[in-house]
Amino acid sequence: MAETTEATRPRGFRSAELGWPELHRIPHPPRRVPLIGDVVGANVRSPLQDSMRFGRQLGPIFRRRAFRNEIVFVWGAELAAELADESRFAKHVGLGVANLRPVAGDGLFTAYNHEPNWQLAHDVLAPGFSREAMEGYHPMMLDVTGRLTDHWDREEAAGRAVDVPGDMTKLTLETIARTGFGHDFASFERSRPHPFVDAMVGTLTYAQRLNVVPVPLAPLLLRGASRRNAADTAHLNRTVDAVVASRRAGGGEGDLLDRMLETAHPSTGERLTPENIRRQVITFLIAGHETTSGALSFALHYLSRHPEAAARARAEVEAVWGGTERPGYEQVAKLRYVRRVLDESLRLWPTAPAFAREARQDTVLGGVHPMRRGAWALVLTALLHRDPQVWGADAEEFDPDRFDAKAVRARPAHTFKPFGTGARACIGRQFALHEATLVLGLLLRRYDLRPDPGYRLRVSERLTLMPEGLRLHLDRRPPVRPGHEAGLAHATD
Ligand code: HEM
Image (cartoon, rainbow, N blue to C red; front, side):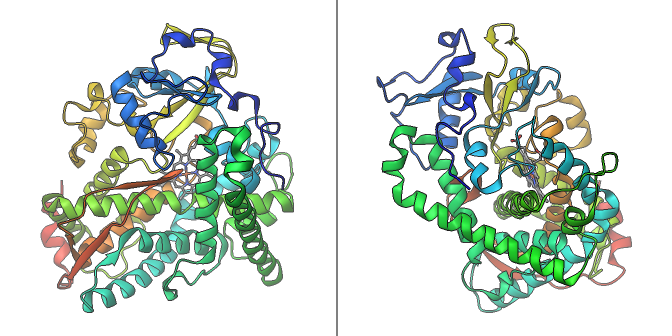
């Protein structure tokens, strides 16, 4: 498929300016350089963290310009809540999301709102995330976690620290590949990441670079990268075509791929085309593992740094699961505190750290900023989740109790948005939360986590976020005695 160019990009991409008649009222960083824009203090490798820094200085709505691209960012809770109003705003496919179109086409994540394949695929695939479907995935999730713990047991016995983001990526890739597509990438049998992961990281990194490189200079500056991107895209296509071909030859397993291949739309009878199926498989393999891997990695980082939270979470797991080797589907949602740890990690580092919203009609944001139909803003979730007016003066601190039921009820709506919002919010939310809660429970019960005292959290960005270079030391814990769960049941709240 052809690469995205200025001509093929949606109109809104070039500059938000077009649709914001009073853009001058929105603050921007002080040292703007003519023609180039707000490049002072900006790093192409960390656009999100740069934006968080600028946001803290400039307030709840601000803008940044790189060459001709001007982007309006919103992170204040009140403005973000307005942008979540589906009657006035919708998903905007721009920036990194639009840059992924050459890879993911009109797949669910990258489809424009008006493309008929979005509704078709949404309706056909949504039952793949029902409670019934999730129960079917649960045993496979347990099996994949068993492969991780086999690997971690060996590392622990050898006294080696484990590579957390690397191993979480193996785990989550295997989980979506098996549950969704009956495929085994054999990630744990490899010393290096699977080539699919390398190709995926390549395309995500390239899509992010395109955000910050001026379009006219892109062919020059990114010539080598663009060649690699074409090779990466070809690799993703080949991998997916092989998975689909083997399913067509081998017959059904009742999973997402079967739904894509066999299921007709319940009311129109339409089916997904082979080209669209390819796009959906790539979409699910990427969207279904990278963000969950980051979420698990950040949670493990925080648990290793907060022994009191780890002890409380572990007590809950032992109380609810006892020594049961294979906890049942129902037993996962009972881990309320573990889930709070996960939510709190996603608050501080939402691994898909922003989403874009566009005006459905001419409107005025916050009663102050007129927007024309189609004008858009980027909601900076990572900073929305740290708005001191909502989260308090200690918003930067890790505290899972922010997610106890009473505290959640007391907060205004639309202040916690790690899975996006509205019709285009994450279809895999329950899948990710079930998987991550299950895995954290199993790991906490099996290991004590020891951080490397010299490690300082560094966050790497390639559209999604990851704690860079995070390694943890493990100590195997004695097994919980069978029947222990009943005696400990009072330890949870
Ligand atoms: C912690 C894990 C995850 C996070 C933080 C996350 C976050 C998000 C966000 C923020 C969006 C909306 C993006 C936008 O508005 O542009 C989204 C959409 C999506 N996610 Fe996730 N996601 C996660 C896990 C998953 C999983 C496990 C799957 C699949 C199994 C998945 C599949 C998708 C798809 C297909 C969409 C597009 C939905 C649509 O537009 O109809 N995600 N996700």
